Length: 193
Image 1 (cartoon, one colour):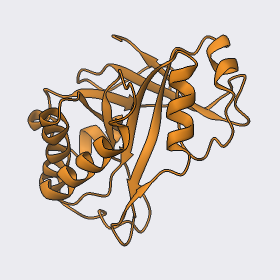
Image 2 (cartoon, rainbow, N blue to C red; image 1 turned 90 degrees about the vertical axis):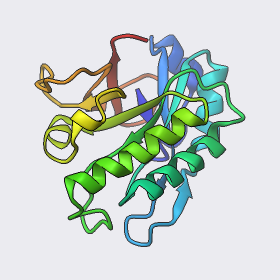
Image 3 (cartoon, helix red, strand yellow; image 1 turned 180 degrees about the vertical axis):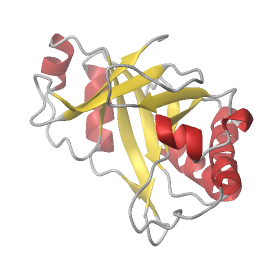
C-alpha cells in the first residue's frame, strides 16, 4: 500500500496483522504553483511506524519538476528526508496530472528529462529509483525509451494492467480498506520484491 498525510492516524501493528507487508510513504512534494519543496506532514510518523511494525518501506516524491535540474533537486530533497530510516524499497518519483500545476504543458522531452534527473541523482546517492505513473501517463507523457532501465510502478484501476512496458508494482485501487487505517487507501501488488 502507499500512504500520505491523507491517511492521518495509522495503527501500523493492525496494518501488519492484516497481511500488509510493504508501505511506500509520501515524503514530500513540490508546490504545484510556487515550486517550493514541502515535506509531507505525516512522513516521519508514517515511515517510522511502518518500519517498527516490520513492513518493508519505501518513499515517494510527488513531482512538479520541469527540467533535469529540478528533478535532481527533488531527488536530493527526498534523500535528505529518508537518510535516517531503514528504507529497503525504492525511492519513487510520482508523476501525474494535477490541475493548474506549474508542470502542465511542458513537452514530453522536458518531462522525461526531469524524471531522468531524479532517477540518475537517486542512483548516484546510493538508492534505487522508481517511476510511478498511470498507464496513460507512461504512454503519452514520458519517453520510456529513455527511461526504460528504471523500475516502474504503474497505476491502473482495472482488472488488469494494459501497459506494455515492464513494471514491478501495480496500484490497482485508491479505495482499498485495511484494518488500522480509517478510510480508503491506495493498494498495490508488488511482483518482484
